[in-house]
Length: 159
Image (cartoon, rainbow, N blue to C red):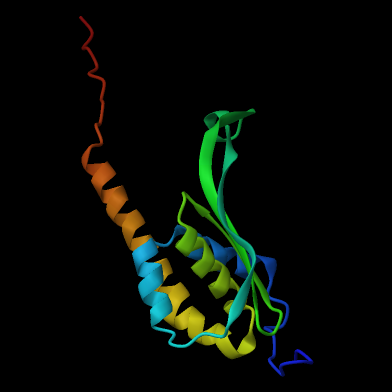
């Protein structure tokens, strides 16, 4: 329990759980994230530690997926850090220049760390956004499968 506010933090969320919800928030469609966030109603006040700012990051890849690393190229990323009224800090990094997206994801990251908000935010925001992302991936996979070309080799008979 935080001494000044009486709010209880989620007991040390595991790195994996937090990484999972941060991924969902970062990959969410901006409009869907905004709509899901509105479903939460009134939120605790927060102040900005690091205003949303766009920058560039180098994307690294591996040859053949497992080989030597190489610099694939740069991509734009927006980052943001906020602090709730009870000193819970939330951060977000999102692809592109979505300043509102980054700020909303940072607020949700902070709320997910609080026991009094965690289950509600998971149920109303994270889980629906995760399902929507999975549905988009399945749809893209089906579209890609339609363009698949199968090659075969004809065996010549012996003379």
